[in-house]
Length: 125
Image 1: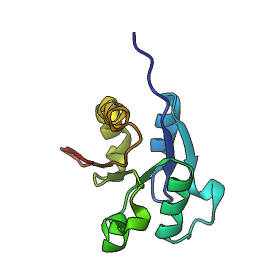
Image 2 (image 1 turned 180 degrees about the vertical axis):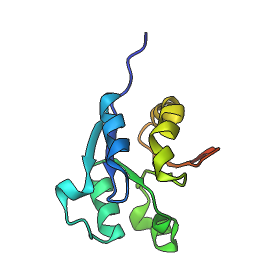
Image 3 (image 1 turned 120 degrees about the horizontal axis):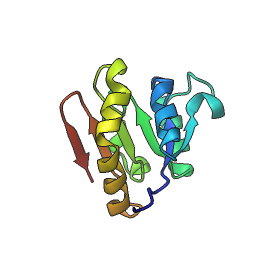
């Protein structure tokens, strides 16, 4: 049986703890935004922290789709954006975690954006 890769995640303040807890039980390294900065830190600061620490930002809002995150300054940001109802988060994560791990490993450090919706999983490289 192949060993799972250990991925580094930073969960935004709007991500339910159950999502971070599930990722940890699967062997991944998870840091919550509120553990390293103020909970009301602006999104650009959160994105900078994720990029600096080489962590995949996990968020539950659409703010990171804004034009300002298309600027070269954020070119190395990798992100998983959930758009399913929060109570379904862990269930959806369980269903797509293998795909997330595979996608991250295939990207070989290149930035990726993943979208986890109620009934779809979308990858943008």
